[in-house]
Length: 387
Image (cartoon, rainbow, N blue to C red):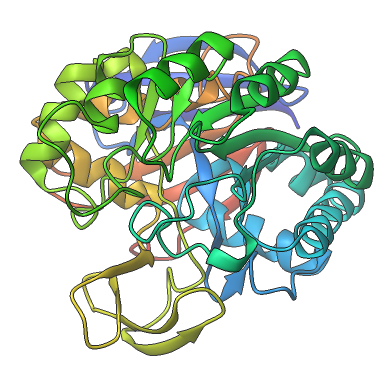
């Protein structure tokens, strides 16, 4: 799109800004008077999306059409870049999911723009109950460079992030092999020792996946794998800040430990996100209950069974839980994850014109998305309050 101007208020200062766009990129940013305009920010970047609005990337039935539909649903909640996340499954199921996502990117320019690559969470994780989470035990297996080669051959090299547990024999060699190919390696769903974590980081791992979750309910006071990852300055940690996965004081303390520069918010969204409260049968997790507040639990138990709140909710909740400014919280869902996703999440001259306009009041637990622009195209405009 040529000659487009988008006006909003800077979340850091409240002052008006006009963003000028040409050929899909930002070409100028100028101050203006816009006291009644919504806030303007880069589009949100979500590194962990398993599904949304009834679309499940891990139910064995994903198609290119469903992937394209998922992109449209995420635009409505302000996400312009995301990593479709495939969890532990058989080799055949993972390849089928990768092929469907690759085909969606081939036929849809919008999907190609929204999806820089795929995050495979597992199957190289801890097999024990607790750190394994909801991942199916029968498909957990050690890291295998040949299997990675098969994923890449089937998808055209689309795997760009892998979450694994470094307790496996040979994990360091696998990490070096993957990072040499430009793949981001994250530590997660693990009960690894501090020495194993240090070995993984030395080999090239640079992220912790949803730190504080995907862990045993009871851990040694010290040492343990959470302390080790918090203390490791070479690791950027992702957090699910939906108010359910981490208590406010835990999230605040972890954020202080990592520092804002080494922290990222992820939604870990599942297919139940955006659906009405009720009881559902999931391909992974079985019978679960979705509360009106957005908490998913195994039916009849207090145990979590996934996430249902989109990143725009997590940004607002994180600000409340950790006492962050709006601009600080937004950075955890834009520029910080963008460093791991094609440099997205920046409102700066020369960068892709991925923008959101939104309303927000202090204390609110929602960024109310007014409009979303992806590569300068307006892909969503709210008729009323955001869902």
